Each structure stands twice: as structure tokens, then as C-alpha cells.
Amino acid sequence: MPRRVGKQTEEFEILRKIKQLRREKGISLREMSRRTGLSEYYLSQVERGRANPSIGAIKRVTDGLGVPLMALLTTGGKENRSSGEVEEVRVVRADKRKTLVYPGSLRTASLLTPDLQGRLEVLLTVEKPEPEGNDEWYCHEGEEFGLILEGRYEVTVEDRVYLLEEGDSICFPSRLRHKMRNPGNRLSKTLWVITPPSF
Image (cartoon, rainbow, N blue to C red; front, side, top):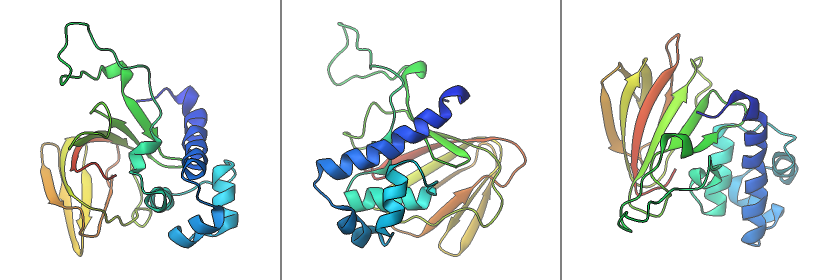
């Protein structure tokens, strides 16, 4: 997990990365507005760090840019590869994980795979309790698997609600409309495997 002292800086880095990716792809704010359904003014405020976008709004932006949400990751440090390691074998040290802190959110996600270039995206998420109604729906390509490591977790897929306890797991096609939240009274920790990397 990121240090609390750097939380605001990390949140701003995510918003700065959005602007950087949009410019690299040569997409105007007007075009982004058309792709996301968000106003040009709002998108401009997000890029300047003057708006507090929800996770759903950030996902709409990354979908509009044609990149996974986790492409906004900040890096905890350079990846270490020992000279004796085989090229295909890559280790992600606990203190070198790339972590995404969602602006204004109760959730942080750490990427446990080295990057998004392989067939798997493995995330460790830590979430504070979240009131009902604050969660947002998602829909994207692929499949996902979740394992509850600590606390309780609620996953809604289409019109069914699954209340999961420590040790429970869930698997579903990501094309199905889904949302999730921590309905408990303490932190929850979950492990997610998504294939192909799309979130």
C-alpha cells in the first residue's frame, strides 16, 4: 500500500497521466467528450486536478483512450532483475509494486504482475467500508476471478448479489454488468485475476 503522506501526489499523478495519454494519442477534449459522454469542461477540470472523478468516470476516460484503467499506475520503483534470472521469469518485490490510488476513493489496487503485457492482470485491492449506493457498475472484456483474503466483500453480477467471506472466491465473465464494495465495518483485502488485462 502507498504511504498516506504521498496520497494526494499519487492522485494528481493519475490525473496528469490521463492528460499525457490523451495528448500522445492526439485526441482533443471535444473528441474525448464524445467518446465518454462527459463534458469538455469536466474533462478539463479532471486533467487539471480540480475535479474529483469517481472510479466509474476514470474508467470511462480510459475506455475512451483505449487503454486499461491500470495503465494509470504509478510505479513504486524500478523493477529488479538479477543477472541470473531467465528472461521470462520476472519477480515483483513487495516494496516495488505499482499501485493505483483512485482519486477520492476508498480503494487502492496494487499490480502483482510486472505489467499489462501478458495474458493475466493480478491485482491486490484494499478497501475501506463503503456505504451502499456509492458503488458503480462495470462492464469490460475478459474473465475475472476474486478471492477474499480479509474482511467481507459484496459482488453484484447483473441482478444477483453475492456476499463473500474470508476464503470465498468468485469467477464470472467480465462482459456481465458487475459492481463491488466492502459492506463490512473494517478493511477488506481481495485478490483479483483478470484475463486478458482489461481493467
